Length: 119
Image 1: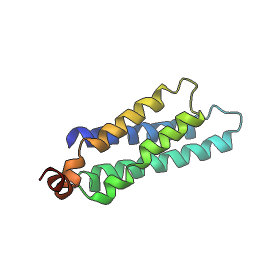
Image 2: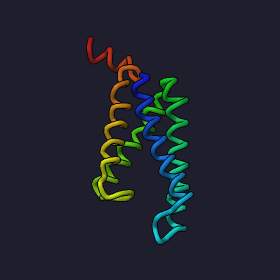
Image 3: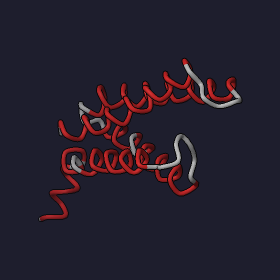
Image 4: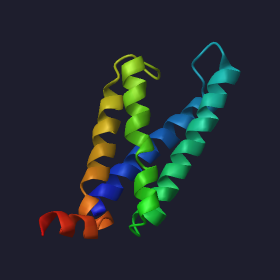
């Protein structure tokens, strides 16, 4: 379980840090738009980290379901080739981290379902 929440918290922290950097030092010519993206990223990072460090660690199922936003978000970013950056390596890393964080603890979030399928 610890590996799972650390992976998800890392994704949240990465988004939060990106948001802070974007608000403080926007690199786009459209600085107001970039600052708005940064503020949205700060909110997304904080919400993800709060969900991870609280309800997810307490194994509340709604938190597990909510965290599926991360891999969906990053897959869409990768497929549509959205910024930031042009290498998209960070998107693949965040997809892998979020999937590891969500798939490792499936037994802990759904123990009865797991027992029924085995017995």
